[in-house]
Length: 491
Image (cartoon, rainbow, N blue to C red; front, side):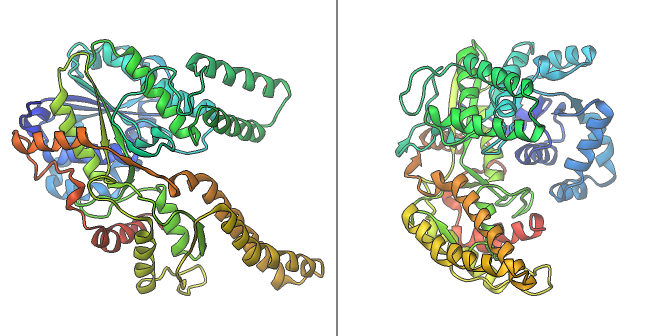
């Protein structure tokens, strides 16, 4: 692999970015604008009814974010002219052919100009409706690939997946592709067309029964989980992402293809400034719940390695991989971007980081009082978790049920609060159990080779860093990530 300057590669480049309002997409766009203003064009695809609505979404959901304050400061009054000359906001939808772009003149222009396609569009909800997840995470990549094949000067297609397409595999998990129809439990019969037909038939039956939209949504969510677990995946998100990878690998022909599989993505490590994050991302839901006093016990194996990687490192790895594999016709390169092999992070450390932060800087509740946190009781088996819940929550709840019948207002509010906490904790346990007992490590040998090639080649490694070995987890979580969560995510 021969790598030249990443800044030179980005110079005069026309890049299509799907899912432009997403977390990683924002960081990717900000990085390009900040380090290489000579980029030719950034075509930013986002879902909207028309161009006017798309531009409104872009302004409110992308450029209005704190993330862009460094870019705004750097360019000052010149920013508007830079944006108008470099950015084209495109109304579209990857669930449709031609990415749902209706303007035929714009389509022709994009097929002439675009030479890099970056697919970041996804739904990341673990229990998304099966039809929605199938449309975005599985068929979406196929439509992006079909579009890329029509680009006359295409140099690379980069698709962002997730490391957790591996499901609950144990041991060292390799950076290898999934073959069409491959399953995690060895069960035969996975066929994407059949899955689409199951969705269609289920929806047809529900509508024939005049089911409400709420009932249809619940049924489609249940169907997704059931189909995922039939073939060994723990949830709808990773199942549909895996099928999306299968389609790309099967249909790529001679398109240069890079698949990036990040692990759990956290706030920025350094750029454009430390600690920027948006939304509640996997383990962050536990931190938010803990800081607000809603989590006092949880389920998990203390020996579990939690694989996390800051968002700016993921974006840098994406850019370097684009440089490294441009014009490699017919290639399929897969990169795990994570930390479990090179800089492992143990589950108990995260609990300690949270305790240390919120003990010194407690969250102020709605009543204006600081939320006092304590050590979380971590239970290592489902049996011990059920026992704990019964003793500490369910038995007191039964007692309060009697009081409720006497209409005692104080105890009634206590009852509902405890019931709410139990349901919340049980939902978190169901969603995150596979990851809190995870016994795998994500091999990143391909990524390590990419890092070495970057150092030996012409890549600007001070700008495009992605080595997790430099991270001190204690310092990062206590001083950067958790304060970033509190500032940008806590409501």
